Amino acid sequence: MIPSMEMVRELATLEPGVPVLSLHIRTDPRDPANTAATPKWLVELRNGLREVADTANEDEPRRQRLARRDVRPSRK
Image (cartoon, rainbow, N blue to C red):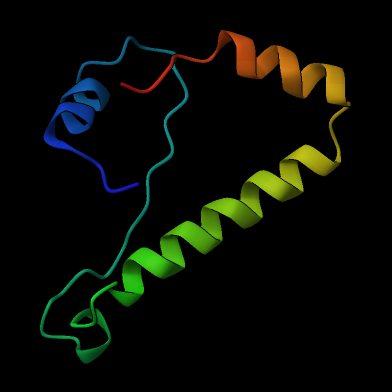
């Protein structure tokens, strides 16, 4: 998913105490790897987030994963 300006605005106005994941990503279009149809930074971001989610989920009981899914805000 590519973040929209609306999503960026939501992050900027989150209430204190809400967890936020911050990333430093090299999106420089002068980098040849970022000139493909799907830029390298986007591929690496997706793969990294998937890996983190998989690692977090393997140590958590299924019931907790389902409960967390039910309470997280839905994406529009």
